[in-house]
Image (tube, one colour):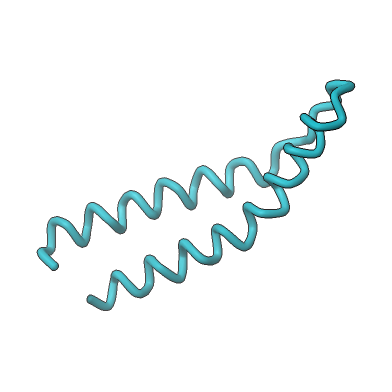
Length: 64
């Protein structure tokens, strides 16, 4: 893997991890729509392990 491609992948992983972490602190907005509120809650719950997985992939790519 070329150094430029490797850095591009790492940069993209960093961007996505930052987005996930940004959303972790957002409050769930009460909309009156139970499905919208459920989606917000699920996004928060799924975001934590997903950020961890992306960080793990970043570490792997760094070793290439």
